[in-house]
Image (cartoon, rainbow, N blue to C red; front, side, top):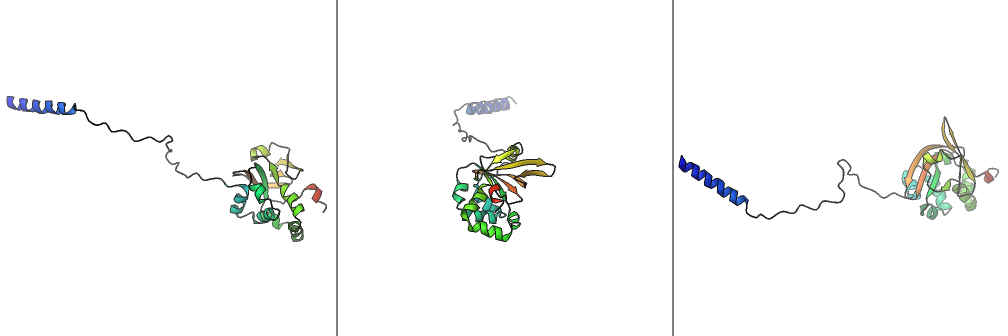
Length: 185
């Protein structure tokens, strides 16, 4: 029995000594500066500008055609920021065909009508509802009214808000706005 105690002691002693030898230390992998949160693996995509967003939406085809006809693509694709009150294709369909064709044929009048839908600056819905009116690029003001039925800008009801773009924001409206000077023509 004494012999076994000595053998076991020698084995334990040699294990202790082998644990004391210098081992190469592994360096930990570099830790990234930002660790993504679990469940937050969505890819960040670049925001599109106002014109690109309108094209991709598919419900602003007439508006996009009008913007192209008036040569406003470059302006509305520019730095901005802009707030656009964008009438849908349904809103344009409510405009008499003769009136719409006349506008599309008269670049100066078309430009006035389109810039009457645009304000300089980025105004989210929260900002718009607290304003009494908003000055357009055309030069006239649009009255902002908040009622039980909703928010109205220049008499058109806002039906969707805060479509953010790289150079501003789009609010969708249900009516084509006509500047005051154009109402009699």
